[in-house]
Image (cartoon, rainbow, N blue to C red; front, side, top):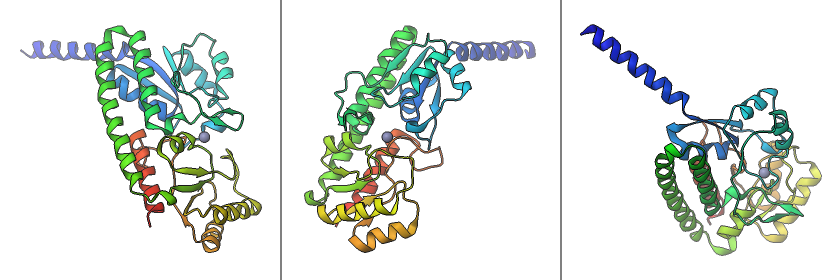
Amino acid sequence: MVRFWLAALALIAVTDLARAADRLNVVASFSIIGDFVRNVGGDRVNVTTLVGPDSDSHVYVPAPADAKKVADAKLVFVNGLGFEGWLPRLLKAAGGKASVVTTTAGISPLKLGSDADPHAWQSVANARIYVANIRDALVAAAPADAGAFKSNAGAYLAELDALERELREAIAKIPEGRRKVISTHSAFGYFAAAYGVEFIAPLGVSTESEASARDIARIITQIRAAKIPAVFLENITDPRLMGRISAETGARVGGTLYSDSLTGEKGDSPTYIAMVRHNIKALTSALSQ
Ligand SMILES: [Zn+2]
């Protein structure tokens, strides 16, 4: 009897190992795509994310270990639209054989200046396209698991539908004349176009530097001219500057709007759905009367 159980346990261990070994190794370029891939792949994929939570893809510098991760992956999921400027060199360093899946394929890009705006995931309707592209690529790479990928994707797409309804209902409750904010990073073009909240980014796309005194003066002028009820200033960390803006304009200084990255597990936006919910809450509380 003991021998039977030992044999049974050994068999279970071997089966587990086999299952882990035939899981698909995939890489996601940044945390939001990593979350989408995890939702569709479930326990049939191992997902490695290059630009992790709380990190900035715009200024990312790949480490040598990233080339190995890419070389070992069956698929590499990227955003495209110029978001991962560091990608071509990384692919070359990885041997140039990686199978790259552009998850924004099929999305009509908006413009940001003269370039394509890469922040397409900020519209939930676009997130559905990312998820469908991820599903199709996983199905093609591992047809034996097609059933699991399709049913995972179906369940997640239904959650995204519910999320988008929630989002539209929340914005409908904000008085129309108050649906505008200042944000320091122009990452919300798709959100603005889809949901009718105007985002003004006087400082352009920069995520790198602390705003200067002249930047603050520009922001104050803009808030007054456009009668903007709330400002979200991600990279102004000096509380005196924040204080000056709200004292001189009467605008509310909102909390954080997450744009390009999820937070870690313990943060308030560890998943895409949590991120969108967090942003809805931050916007509605800053813009309500
Ligand atoms: Zn960005």
